[in-house]
Image (cartoon, helix red, strand yellow):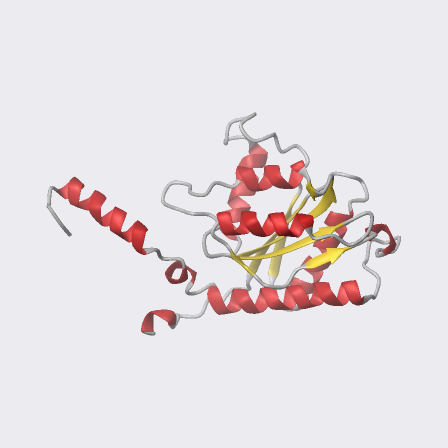
Length: 220
């Protein structure tokens, strides 16, 4: 129980990275992500968004590519993330998946996403669907993130935003507020103890065995 009590609460604002999955001039996934950013900032958070324009396909460029470096630096900076994708052909977009694929599971001794919170959202051009958010949840688990229970799916997104790009009042907007509130709460609850929450016995055991071999002892 003592280890579940944070040694000290972080003094800085909770930090959130927002990823969206479309390059269209009027991208509804981007508009929804920006609406989420406004809410998180109003709740006391700090947000940054990543523009996927110019990001190469995974393995089609070295990881020293400027856009890849930018994305990975933002992933390390963030304590929580929002992933928002359009649904295309019944799935998340390739643009969305490419961003996640460029974030490594481990980078040196650092796991850029492990233990960080995640909220998933999607927009659709037609009726409401949950295909994209379901896929994003699977990816969040694979990236060892703490994906919150709530989520947002906005159907007929072209009807839900005004000419200025702001989301109109509606039950869909209320759900976005719910999701961002939940993300903020989970982030505040877990960010100081995230390393302990995702600490794994199997990895500690492996690390101990490696150290034993390195120092020449039979057991540690």
